[in-house]
Length: 81
Image 1 (cartoon, rainbow, N blue to C red):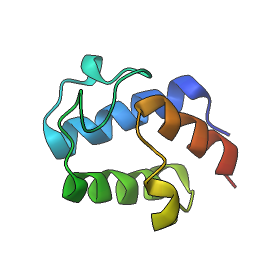
Image 2 (cartoon, rainbow, N blue to C red):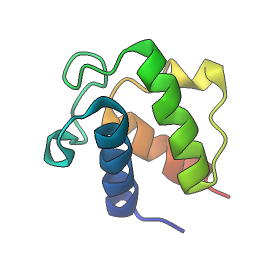
Image 3 (cartoon, rainbow, N blue to C red):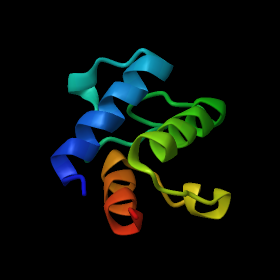
Image 4 (cartoon, rainbow, N blue to C red):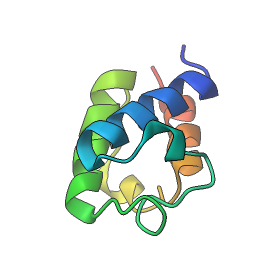
């Protein structure tokens, strides 16, 4: 079971790989779109990579609710198998 810190680090790595954002800029309170410039296409890539990395399924309807990095961390922790 991953911790919030593990998930945050993993998401930071994913966002860095996909969007080129420095990992230290990926913080819990950051908005994917407003702060990190992750567009909808990149967000799909982030979600797919997170699903694989954390063994969690994130349905399309739920992706809309993942506005901030913290939202994504909470979601992954709650839905891990």
